[in-house]
Length: 359
Image 1 (tube, helix red, strand yellow):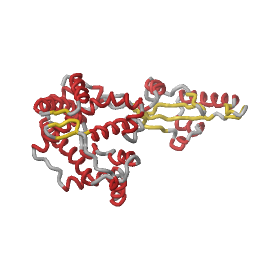
Image 2 (cartoon, one colour):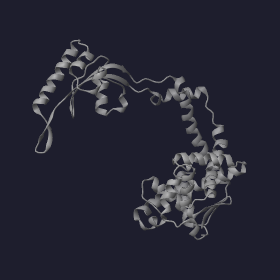
Image 3 (cartoon, helix red, strand yellow):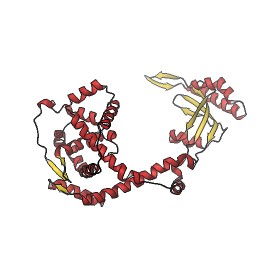
Image 4 (spheres, helix red, strand yellow):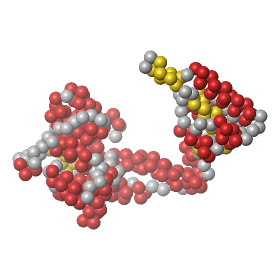
């Protein structure tokens, strides 16, 4: 289910552009009577609309689909259609229910709403007014169609806000209970500030391949071990950086970080987590030489204060409750809706999908 009017149309121009090569200019297209697949409280969902949704979903799954002809000729795509179509039908029916409910509640897409949505669509696609007008003209998209699609998403979101979101509340005690039950969700990352000494190992060409020079490797290893030994005896590490290091970090005393350990490779993260503040690690052999690290500062992972995450908790809980309330709301609305199928095969797919979801 799309959750915002503009978000629901973010890929609109991209999709239309991909399909435009398969379509004649708008002025030369014949008028086609739409085949109705289902009516929901009098509102219709057509074969063309289903095909558009199928293509969008397949493209979202990184499938190359330009037209309905591709769906008919490609065996793999046909198999995927069997998988995705039942859910697309279910979502289409729910959207029609919400759209009709929005109209019953008196919501209307105003001209101001429409113009604001158009501006955001232009910004999302990096188009000025002239480029936008040229794009929709080339693709045969009318402003009436744009308005219709914007209106549909506007009404859906308006109903969600009125019937679901505005009824959600979370008490302070409920927020604290969630905080105590899910401490792992609110941990700070383990951080570390390091100093490094890096000593490179020269390479040479042998048989057309670049290999390390053995003598250079031995000399670099001895050099880094000497630096570590002196550091362990208490010499200032920054002074040793100035004497030994060949890294660009030498200019600031070898400082690296603060580093979020969760963003490092698993092997390096586990290695550094074992070190305490002030420790000097064993030399690390890298693809280009030897690296010696000292832990300058270290902060362990710790729970963030409740006050800092109160709003985040509220959003999490409300999102979970909101989906549950929306599901229950739609079950109730479907029970009251008049759903008239014009295609028995699609009706069967829809009913099997609903039965599998037990709603």
